[in-house]
Image (tube, rainbow, N blue to C red; front, side, top):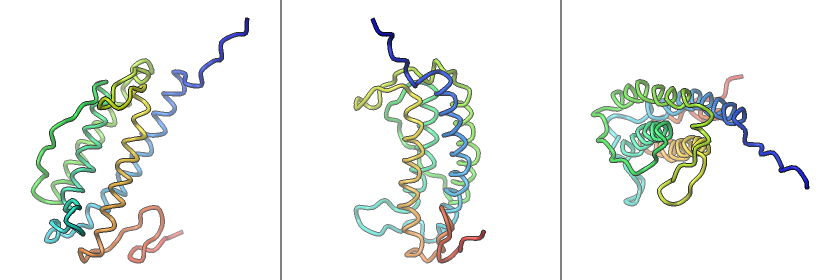
Length: 173
C-alpha cells in the first residue's frame, strides 16, 4: 500500500500565505488611499454611465466591503452584510479606512492556522478553507480601484501612480 500524498496546504503554509497577503494589503492600502484622495469633493457624484456607480459609492464599496470582508473572515462567518452610508466627505472616508482596515487586518493576523483552515461557506457559491478568501479581498480592492482610477481624469482630477507612473505622476526610479 502506497503512503497517502501529503497535502501542500499545511498549517505552516497557511500562516506564510496569510502573512504574504496581509503584507500586500499594507502597500495596496496606500495606493487605494491615493486614488480615493484624488476624487474631487465637488465631483464625487460623477458616474461615467447610468449603469455605473457614482465615484463616492465606488470608493466606499472598496474601503467598507474590504474591511467588513476581513472581519467576516476573522469571525469564520461570511454572509451578506448591510452597507453603511458613506461618511460625508472623502477626507472622512479616508480617515475611516485608516482607522478600520488595519484593525481588520489584525483580526486576521491573530487567527490560528486551525482557524484559517476552517471551511467556510461563501454566499452558498462555494465552501473553502477561509484563508483562500484573503486573495479575493485583495482582488476585489484592486478591481474596483482600477474602475475608480478610470473616473479620475473625467472628473477633472489627476491619476496617481498605481503600479508605475501615470501621465500625471511619472514613475520615479
